[in-house]
Image (cartoon, rainbow, N blue to C red; front, side):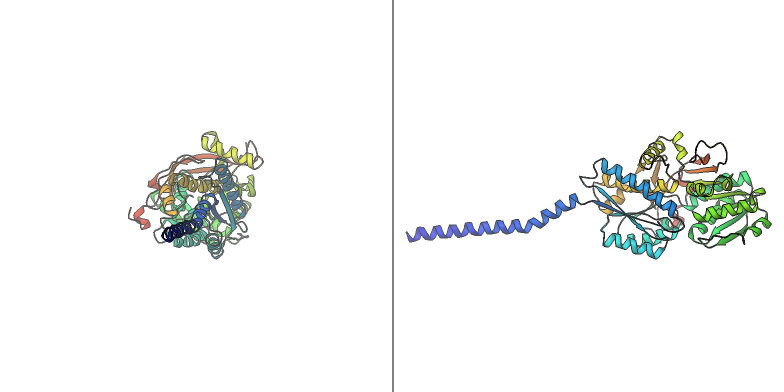
Length: 418
């Protein structure tokens, strides 16, 4: 009897141990199971630092509006494995230090998965420095040549926007043979302006163009009266406005009032829709420039019509601007790569983005393998002052330079091996 009781006690003890062990295993795995469930239901977060205040605020606000459409479309379609996307917009105040600080906060405090944004050659480099170090994808939607160079680049760096070499080259190839080859540049004295001048001069050299002067002004200048007499005295065939946003509006208006157009054609590497709207038909009459997008492409490009219709529906009949469209494309490219990669891991998404062949809003695009520059068309437009169908009908498309890697600086020149 005692032997039987001893055996029963032993078996009971073993059962208790097994039960305790099972309970311990359940406790041990519970946090793991919770983490999996949490990871599958947490929003995908995209940080979006842009200059909501400052000289480029109008363009930045349009970037946000278009980015929100891309996010809404993705979420309405079900998101990714049940996860929705959240857009975290931050004001970088057009300041490189502020841009780096906001980006660091987005990554370390808000735990974003990706960064898309920027509207300055300088701020995008500071954003990229932060994302590159932390191995987070950054898709830049502002023009820059430097961001593709090997010293600033990483496998996590993508450039959705045109770059100055592409833009200035396309405008030069259209304008210099047509309007003349004696050229003066009025240049905002920072990376954007400087890189645009370099692009024009490189393209112009093959066309026989001559630089009479490169006149620099500080970013955010309000008064150009000290520069205009010198420009007029040089009597150029072409005056190239290598500036942006409010600077472009002010300089074109003052040059027009001063009478520069009587003997000189004014062109701009980036002829902004928002600047034309702000400056008016008379000031911008006859000005020619380049752009990544013009809403009027909808007459011939189905993807442009689809994008415009979404924007009109969301914003009371308004049409998207050129830089606004980049906000849409920058977000869409990242999210499509998430779907293709079946992951939000930055390395896997980077590999998927590098394979994208896409047409979000303007025609066919792809990222060049060596530097992740988006290869795309450059649209040449001329500002209208007559025959406009409505207030948005501000440009005529006079030429389109098709996507071609030959129009980019070579991978070797940028420091890449292939």
